[in-house]
Length: 346
Ligand code: PEP
Ligand code: MG
Image 1 (cartoon, protein in one colour):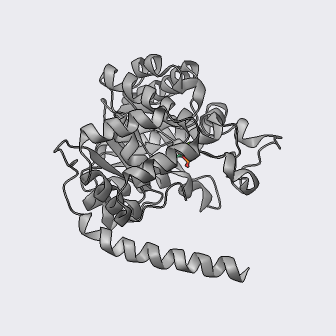
Image 2: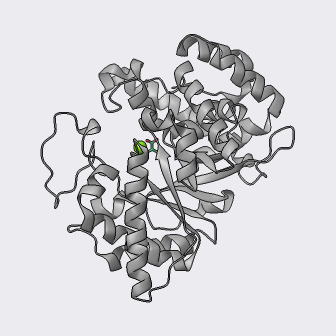
């Protein structure tokens, strides 16, 4: 309706003004006010060049779904190989985290008929589907491994719920590697294999997961959905979708601690990393690698450059002690300079 349109036009204006003000932080070094370093990742969803790669240290999430969704047929190994090689070339030598196909749930392919499911987000989605459709999975892994000879590629599996999932997926990678060796096709023998942490069952055993993988990245979009048992696509229950709840921050803090202790890289590539306030709290909880859409980089850098690590740790500790998301937000609003015009959880 008209009212909503005008309300959002106003929001857009404020957003654009702020974007301009924040843009001067784009090419600043990623340093906290107290001098500690962190790194910024870029989230991408296509093989086209992204000019913001120069402001990032790595590609923290390369969603490969576009290749499948834009195609009229199942993309061939050669088509995928070319696309992945192009992404590496466009990344200017920075590491690229390729996420294997995350289809099912809300995303479908017109050339792949899948059985109807009553609860698709709890169904045969992402890695579960790939482990079932072995040809599809192996084709993607072959293409990714072949491309890994042309730049630094990390491979990451979505929707991992157990150590079985990790072991099963890694076994397929080993099979594909063996085939490539046999065929004398080059690939990076030391390619890093990691997981997305977006299901509470794997988050709860982060210490055990860290032993099985080279790295992990947290998908806070799905983690919020599964932790709170709330459908991320249902606007009717948006109030229950609380990515800044005390439970989220406690869970995130535990994952960061376990991975930091194990000495394995941990990043966040869900939307919470691109939210300046979310980023602030998570750095206080121990996170040092944040991956986001290009449009969020400047604001996140601005926020993180304004706080010392000690201040962030204090804030993070206090956040974990709040009882509700509203209390978390109220507390954070009191801590953040109003000039930053941050719209908390908006
Ligand atoms: C996430 O779940 O946070 C994530 C990054 O993956 P997607 O949004 O593609 O499900
Ligand atoms: Mg996800």
